[in-house]
Image 1 (cartoon, protein in one colour):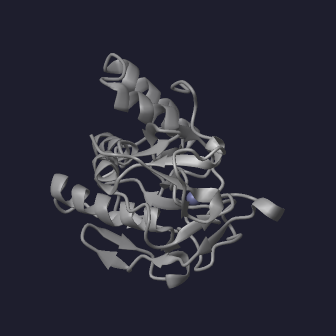
Image 2 (image 1 turned 135 degrees about the vertical axis):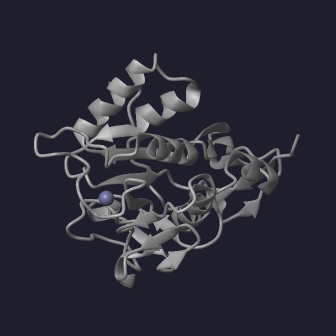
Length: 258
Ligand SMILES: [Zn+2]
């Protein structure tokens, strides 16, 4: 098993001895091997750092430090032409780039289509309510080519929505784990979809006899019904343990939310 080292994050990355009295100031930091196993698709250290909250005001207003720019195209993805919206935390940009490669292998010819992430220095980004700290990304439903609703006029989910591709993608990102208080938890905070899509997903899961494993349950918990997400979903990540000034938002549901 890999050894843990203790780092006093609040004392400016000074190494502390094991007799340090302020135990609450110490976090257990895994070796990079362990991090790689928990989250092979995530870069937790390098690149842009999220500061503040994804959606905050005043002291909690989000910002992006040393932002990482997502190139407009790469293996398995294509992003907006405008550079303004392509900045993110190292964690989010690495996840987009690495997960797109997995999608390209699993579903040849399918491109991830990336919308807004954050501005170069983060902060409020109209018309988005969040997207302030580089931990949010808008992604077109996997398998769609045009940016258009996957619902018909009556609000029913159409075959523009590819259940298998989207579900597989959400499983992939949700399977990435970080250590929070020594416990592995998903690096995904929530995935916002239109309420009618959430209902559709709940019914689809029920029809197949419930979640097939714990990861299915974790995905369903994170799918939060939110208006305005019928042509894309919104992926929010938790703070990397290495983002010293990052504020996590409320997670997905405790249960399936169905
Ligand atoms: Zn969004």
